[in-house]
Amino acid sequence: MINNYKLLVGASVLSVLVSCGNKQQAPQTAPPAVAVSVMDVQAENVSFYDEYPGTVVAMNQTEIRAQVTGYITGIHFQDGAKVQKGQRLYSIDQQLYNANYEQAVANLKVQETNLLKAQKDADRYHELDKKDAIAKQQVDYADAALEAAHKQVDAARANVNALRANLGFANIAAPFSGTIGISQVRLGTSVVAGQTILNTISTNDPMAVDFSLDQNEVFRFTSMLGKTTGAGDSTFCAEFWW
Image (cartoon, rainbow, N blue to C red; front, side):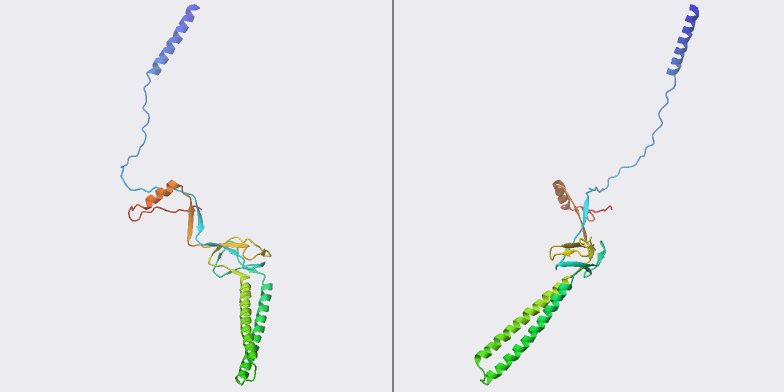
């Protein structure tokens, strides 16, 4: 039994040695070739770009404010629409302004009638003065009354013009062609002259782009602008992504 065990162990060891010897003698395979591209290097001018976040803004933009006090009675546009210069945008209650205007017109007519009477009186007194049929004091009074009547007519006419302007201000029109923003008031809103912002209107063309640079970049761009690199070169180029 012992001899058979030794023989079995010896055969096993011999089998392991033969197996190891065969493994060490296996041929080594080379790795596959890597495909590469070959091209000629050439010198040429290239452009480099710096990207900055920017904000598109209108070159001309203004706030629309009410010039008279009252209640909004009409909105005559769609938010964000394009409007033309002179197009009516808002209406403010005109009842009070129309009544004041009509009263001023009536007062002007009264003052014009008084002026006509004062003119006739002055003419009559001057005719009598030529015949020495009236006291000089009466003539002087007539001339003073005529001058006062002229001034009263001028004041009444100025009041009519002012109230006519207020009546016109009750209709708010676009100051220039552009894009109207979102209305800040609605029908029935009470607005105060010179204070309440109704909307904002901005031009569509031309436009501008605002972007920020640090101090080092400003110096670099200033140096680039000072160099003449030939026709067709450009320092700034704008591209937009929406």
